[in-house]
Each structure stands twice: as C-alpha cells, then as structure tokens.
Length: 71
Image (cartoon, rainbow, N blue to C red; front, side, top):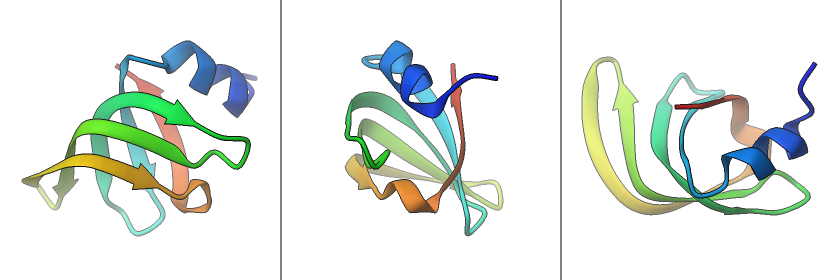
C-alpha cells in the first residue's frame, strides 16, 4: 500500500489527477502540500460530467480528496 504523504512527495512538480468527494475530477501540476494533505495545483482543470473548465492555480483541502493518481 502506498502512503498518501509518500505519493505526494513523489508527485511534486508532476501532473496529477485528483478525484473529489463531490464527484469532480481535477487535473493539474502539484506544486505543494502540507501535513493535512492540503494541496496547491497549478494549471488546474476541472472535469465534471464531461465538461472541462480551466481553474488556474488552485488550493484543495485534503479532507475533500478521495484519490490521487500521478499522470
């Protein structure tokens, strides 16, 4: 099993796909995180029901994240 903190460290400065509790998918470059798994993404895009939207720089709260996948 991969521990979340280890995955975040290995994924720094890489593009990740994040699934949120409300069903949205966010894709962007992971540029930072903290011990609570709050994350900073640059060039973020949201995919909701097949519709994409550019978000730019985004701060995600860790308690909303379901899964993280490096791309």
